[in-house]
Length: 230
Length: 261
Ligand SMILES: Nc1ncnc2c1ncn2[C@@H]1O[C@H](COP(=O)(O)OP(=O)(O)OP(=O)(O)O)[C@@H](O)[C@H]1O
Ligand SMILES: [Mg+2]
Image (cartoon, rainbow over all chains, first blue to last red):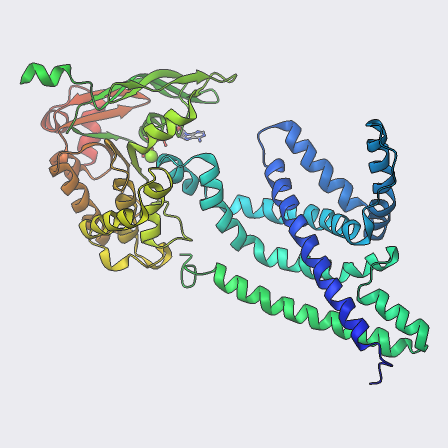
């Protein structure tokens, strides 16, 4: 396959895609955990907040989400700064906008995954922790969270694969990731099949790698459970 | 000497504990005083409120009325809008709970940790015992309950009897002043009951203060210094094992003893 010298460009795009996916998933995991805690809360206000977040984010097409965050953020930051008498133009830029938009989306779906997982940790284990004098935070972080992770991992893995491909959307705001690099190459060489095919292979490769990584993580998280579950 | 023991505060004291679930009144005023070294068995038919009472004592369940004191220290309580009483002091309740070991019917070991990790978790995280010391103490406890060889196994790989013994070791690791057992052998296959009862018997012989909810009548009779019979949220009969088993005043208690041989 002749890449007409665009090989290094595609490689750079791949690195950018991976960086974006990793930073968006970090944001998304935190949001998802917070969302699940909010939705499982005793307080009606927190439940409403969690409900509002997942409903709104899941109701908006992702492409629109990217555009709203990219164009909306500078308008909003500008308005806030003006309140403090600062009149400058600030924008998030494609990378940060992509991180926020994809992170918000991932978080909304992850909220449901985590919430389902929260329900699977038996009440008795938390009572055992309480009866030994473990405080709320210790109990969550040492007893609930590791088990949550094990249950949620397959669902989160799925969401991550979707996220990985959604990074292509950020090309519309000019982030130099795989998709945009491929478009540039096509524009230059008029060989759409070569470069879109290449992009497809790269996404496929990343998905296969992810899949392997997930299997290793799941194997690790399942220590002590093999042969168990009577 | 005798007057001395009377001036010591009781290990555990509960006064007039009331508890309801919705409109169902489950505990209708239960009082109990456990002095150091006493082993008190709590008997009663299913639904009489035994578990609920035990769980109220360390506030796993929120009572609606009553007073609880451990070693003379009153639990600080506050009333919620729904009328139930919860701890008013998070630091006090975690400290007091750590001094009241609770052994559950369903063991409730943490499945993602090895047996050793289960046992050292609370000493290291709550008591701030140095890890090395906690491990040494945990190993001694596992030895004592007879599962030293399982220290690096996960709970899912142990038999029920081994899991319950591990759970007892986990509780002992916090050096509790009082031990509460809620039907510790009811979830076990018959052939594993004895190994757990042996451990509990050993603890009684050490002079530990214990409350034991059980359906193992013969064991209760042998191990207890005092027996309570609960019926419908009240103490129906109370006394020495011989008295409660052989010569109860209450007809209900007599009937219960007869039907449980
Ligand atoms: N969380 C709860 N919500 C509603 N009702 C409850 C709850 N826990 C217990 N009860 C009710 O309270 C009553 C006493 O229950 P408890 O578990 O204390 O009985 P028990 O004496 O321990 O019985 P068993 O021998 O079956 O363990 C029962 O009628 C039970 O249905
Ligand atoms: Mg019970």
